[in-house]
Length: 152
Image 1: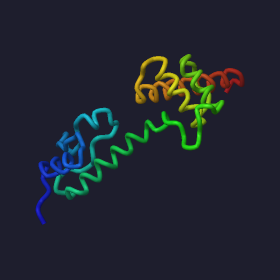
Image 2: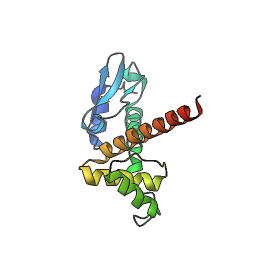
Image 3: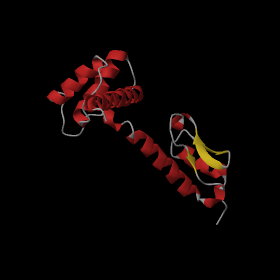
């Protein structure tokens, strides 16, 4: 069996339409390029390119890509739900006002993200990030108010 090389992995990634390359980054290998420029995790704890086969490297890339895309799935309306749903409409209204989201219901969250995106011209990544930041602030503010109220 031939030894795996970075060139072979990059050729395989390109042949599958991926806009990324495998490169050494410090002690480990990672994926770099347009497709993965915003990934939180882009490196693997692999120190030698020969530790994996070309197919295994491509599979690792595709696993990381799916993991990244799943982080933004809350933007999409859940299957079977409708924009006529009062939860989605309330979320959409709250998102356009940039108000603190007070629900983790997937239909509401989708509405909030889409409302924010429509009002402020944000892409789905920006809208999801904003939802998460606002929701976290809202949860922290609520927790702090309970601490004050009950002095614990």
